[in-house]
Length: 69
Image 1 (tube, rainbow, N blue to C red):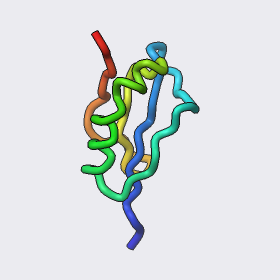
Image 2 (cartoon, one colour; image 1 turned 60 degrees about the vertical axis):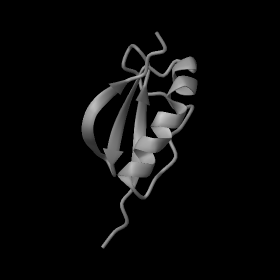
Image 3 (tube, rainbow, N blue to C red; image 1 turned 90 degrees about the horizontal axis):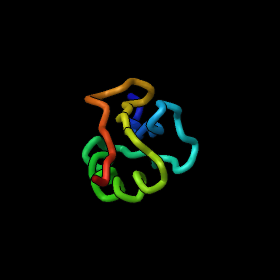
């Protein structure tokens, strides 16, 4: 049985994937979602417009918009 790997795929407003900042890898979905809740303002300030949660390589849930306004 393999260990779960939850990460966030981060994109700009044009839909381009960003290579910096990177999402850490989490062992639980709860920890991944908590991290985004704590860091979304900083990410939005770094031109990240959306975040997609990934379970391994599989997208999970909805695309999360990161807005400060």
